[in-house]
Amino acid sequence: MSNAKIIVAGIGPGSPEDITPAVLDAVREADVIIGYKYYFQFVEPYLRPGTECVDTGMKKERERAEMAFELAEAGKTVCVISSGDAGIYGMAPLIWEMKRERGSNVEIEVLPGISAFQKAASLLGAPIGHDLCIISLSDLMTPWETIERRIRAAAMADFITAVYNPRSNGRYWQLYRLKEIFLKHRSPETPVGFVRQAGREEQQVSVTTLGAFDPEQVDMFTVVLIGNSQSYVYEGRFITPRGYYREEVCDGTGGIGQEIMTESFRTIERELKHPDIPIGKKWPLLHAIHTTADFDMENILRVDDGAVEKLYEGFASGRINTIITDVTMAASGIRKGALQRLGVEVKCYLSDPRVAEMAKDKGITRTQAGIRLAVEEHPDALFAFGNAPTALM
Image (cartoon, rainbow, N blue to C red; front, side, top):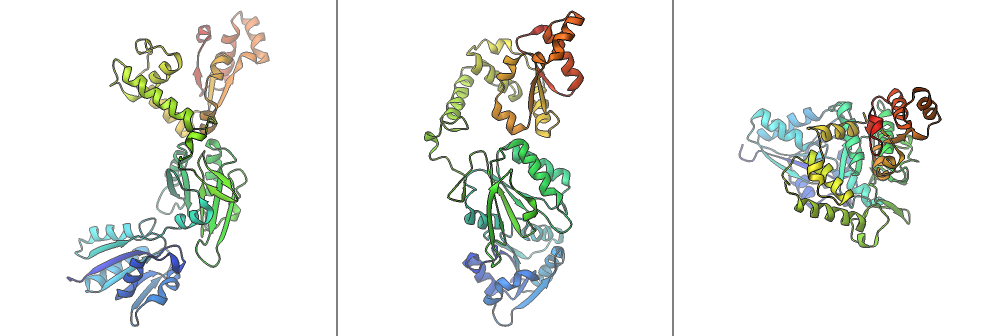
């Protein structure tokens, strides 16, 4: 039992050059290799004569893990191979969970590997140069409702997003839904790269845009990478800048303007009399002072408990997709970039031809008439009132 050991090894995406030396050593030294049968072609050249190989088909992960423990508990050194990195949608979590469930004394060692999204990124250029997330579209073990919430969060937060398991023979519409959600929060010109069979003979590399991306070109062997708001294509390569040239970028999408605004907020916060207020009240207060340059806002502004948090949840879930303003000046003050990212439309009824007629017939102001029309047509909208308090009447 003292020699009982399971090595969980990520063998990379499929190219011999992408298998790490540590993994090659583990494969050579193991008494038994266990894995999905398709993966053995990548490690067979490195096996010692007499090495026992146990292969299984798809969806046999628990069976492979159980065999690994049985053999290791019998005193053998077992290497469980997993494509890419064993800790990313691989066998490592299952092996650790099973060790806990069994109360086993078997030693576990996890060896990292190059993941498919990393290999794909290197082939596309440099698309993952900033904050990123990875989402699997497989709903075998995760409810689709949970997956969709994660997709929406990634799209809203401007993460570079790697998509695993984009489709299969029995699952095709999920990738269309992902594209639909991302287009609510990202420009159609956002770069998208996808690589099929990364690192293997059948490798195919493609770069397109979010708007032009065709899910029909993708299969279960494909990894999709979606850029963020700063990503671009240069000489056919998909690039996401880290920010080293930010000082030279002053186009309103980030750079110096964003840094100045951030520093302004820090300065305002330092000057607050009561800085230790809940973030749901502090955030609108900082914006109000930043806009008006009036620190009396700390005494004037009133925010109901939970109001900002509730609005955030409404925008994040897509439940709020329309903002109604009483006057056009209020509408023009709402940041267009934020509206585009959130997929939110702003409406002001003041210039609607029906407003003047209603105001005349009912003897009310045009702003009152506009809001009444808006309530009828968009009862679930967020209503923002600026210069016309009579609109509340």
